[in-house]
Amino acid sequence: MPLIIAIVLLSVLKYFEVGFFSKMSWWWIAALMGVAFIWFEFIEKMLGLDKRRAHDSMEKIRKERVKATFEKDSRGKRR
Image 1 (cartoon, one colour):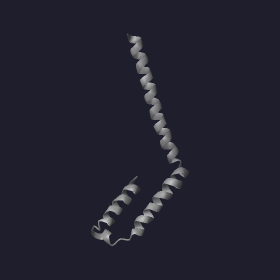
Image 2 (cartoon, helix red, strand yellow):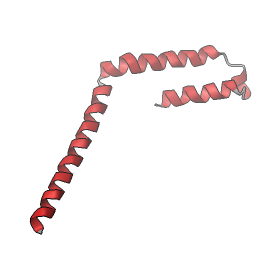
Image 3 (cartoon, helix red, strand yellow):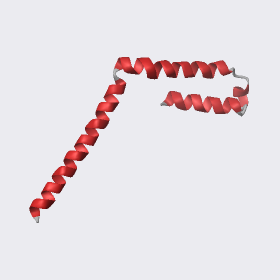
Image 4 (cartoon, one colour):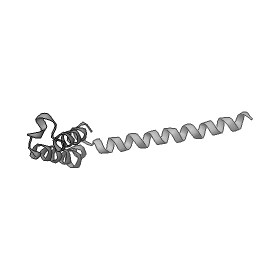
């Protein structure tokens, strides 16, 4: 995510020609976009980060579902 923020920030600064960035080449921004593409399409999958995030989100959903189920059961038994 920091890489995407850097790309957007550099693009805006270059587009509006702010200070040093007015002289910077668009190729630097294009190179960062290439690095971001390679990271998200290949490296992240090789390291298993995409599966880990998906697993964490599914685990969170499961825990919330179990908690809601037990809260319903405990409310029903008390009354």
